[in-house]
Structures are given as structure tokens and as C-alpha cells.
Length: 473
Image 1: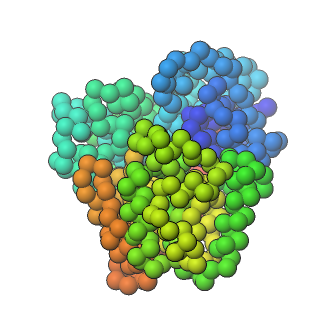
Image 2: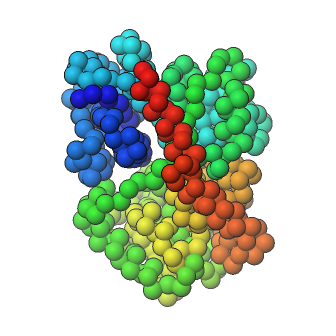
């Protein structure tokens, strides 16, 4: 099999997709390396892009099922798979020249397994350098206080290279010092610092100052910072038939894009909040009112409120039943806005939508995949972070890079009023004031990203550098 690299993502769909894109990238530019992707027993096979799974350039191995427990996290999945992972790595080592194992944060349990086998381990950080700075500095922050970030509340946390951030805006899993996720993240961050290198899904032009700060060692004051390789941003490749939601979604996809075909250039604001982004029934109604007041053309992906909020009303919700949307929107909203708006149930083909010529703005939860998809398409944003590391990303997008407009939020549930949403959407889409500046900055960022990804660009040079380490062994 020759020189081989093993990639081991967590079972989360976004992490699987990102790891497949990394595998594609490596093979495209360094075809002599064999790529094996090992999928956790908890991974949904449908999440693996069909084109990669069927490609002769990438071998996919599925770990056998292991005993499960109630309420497991992605970290737990990786921990219970360690025995089977070890057997797989031993078998690969016997048949090939295994040069490196690449894991992500949630498959961190593989780190001690690989170390015991003498396999160099690299981390593929699927988010950007802004979140990486937080993760690398997390052990230092942990040692500087006995309080959790949730307890610290609105106190400012200082992280080298980042704009000031409130303690409550740290990544969700790090907030509760006594929580299970907190300990998992702490272990993962310490292992990452001890790894052979970190591959990051970003490029130097997009996060210049933060990347420089990390490489200088400021985020890890007590230990050497591992080599950092910025090889992105990597966006999911779309292949016909490769859809996570099956045939019904493919039909909806065509309908959505056909509707966009009929709209004026750069006239549509797209609202989409990821696969886990859900709002209360009250917030959905407020959002609808804001869009109606704005007068702006829109494409809005709506997911039902959490089941535990209004079980009675959501029990009738069906993913393939568009009429259910009316249960959560103001009476008559769909009819009043049908000439300038389209509401889509639960899912839309985000990459294709953002790349469409009629889309001129994006209201986003600030997930990193969504962020880089918008930047690569040159679409300015309104930042509405919800969970995970999204508030950290929001601070970067608004305060550091000026690629997004902020939203004012109130209360513990971070409620956004109809007037606030209408104002920000209007500012973005009319190109007045801050909206014009953000649009110009995004277009410049897009050009920088495209240059980084071109032959001889910084991301290609960085990829060649990490491959050189693997070949050197």
C-alpha cells in the first residue's frame, strides 16, 4: 500500500464531511499518499459523501459496533471505540507504511492509542484559527482560576490574538467547570498541544493576526506550540445524488434554486442556522415580523421549536409537510410575503444557495462551515450565534474581520426583536453605512481565500509542508 495517512473523524456529520474534504485535498495534490478514513461505529454511513466512499483514491473502514450507553457524547463514542481502533491501526501498520494519524477534537481518545503504537498524531481542527486560539489557551485559563466561565458571567476573558470576549461567550462545552464536557475538552486541548501538528480549516489571509499570534506561541505560554498548517478553507464538494436527507430534499433543492433563478441579482437575504439551530415559537414569530417589516426579499430555512417547548404543537410536525410551517409563523405571513419570500422546511442546499447570483446577504449562526461558505461566495453576513464556539466566531466576524453585522440581543435567551432584525437586514441588503463596508470587506476576503487556494497560494504551501513532514517520517 506504500506511504499511508489515516484520517479518523468523530461521528458528527460536519466533522466527517470536513475530513473527507481533507482526504480529497491530500490525494489531489499528493496522489502517491494512500488515504484511509476510519469511521466510528457510531457514524451514520449516509453522512459519508458518496463520491469519496466510492473513490479508489480513498479507502473507508468502518469500526465494528461496540456497546453503547445512555446519553453518550461524541467524546464517549471515540472512547468506547479505542480497542477496535487499535486493532485497525495495528492491521494497517502491518500492511502499509503508516506515516501519520489525523484526528479531530472529538476523536481525541485516539491520541493515547496512537502514542502507544508510536504513530505520529496530527489534529485536524475543523473550525478556524479564532476557535483554535481559544482551545490552545484553555488549559492556561483553567489553571488561572478556580471558577467556571459560567460563574464568571460577563467578566472579560483575554485570549492572545482575539478581541475581548465575555466568559459566557466561551464555547458551550467549556462553560461548566464541573461538567463532563469540560473535562473532555481540557484533555483534548492538552493532547492537541502535545501533538505532532495541527491542520486548520482556514487560510492566512482570512485570520492573519490570529494565526501569527498562535505561531508565535502566545496562546501556549508554558509549552512549545505544535506546528500549525492552514490548508483551507475547505468546503464540502457537491456531487449529484450526494444528499444527506434523501430524495424528498433533492426535490426541494431544485425548487429552492429554481425560485432563486427568478429573483433579481443580489436581492435575496438567506436565513439559515445549521442542522441544530432551533428557535422558540415566540422568536420564530418575531423573526417573521422582522422580515415582513424589512420589505427585503428573503429565503428562510425554518426548523420547528424544540420539542420540549411546545410538544402539542410540534407533534404534528413532519419534515415533508410544508403546511406545518404555518403553525409557527404569524397568521397570513406566508400569503402576505409570497411575492418576495420563500420559506423552506428544515433544510436547504446551503452551498448552492450562497453561490447563487440572486443571494446578497446571509443571516447565520456563525458556524465555521457556514462562515467559510459565505466568504468563499463573497456573501456578507448578519451574525446570530447560538451554541458551541459560534459566539467566539461572531466576535471575530464582527469585531476583528468586519465581515458581518451584529445583532442586539436581550435576556438570557438572547432574544432578537423584529425591529432589530429588520434594521440589520435592511442595512445589509441596501448597502448603506455599515452594510456597504461589510460587503466590500467580504469581497476582499473572498479574493484572498481564492488566492490562498490557488497553485502556489499559502494554503497549498502549507499543505505541502505537512506532507513533507509525513514523508520524512
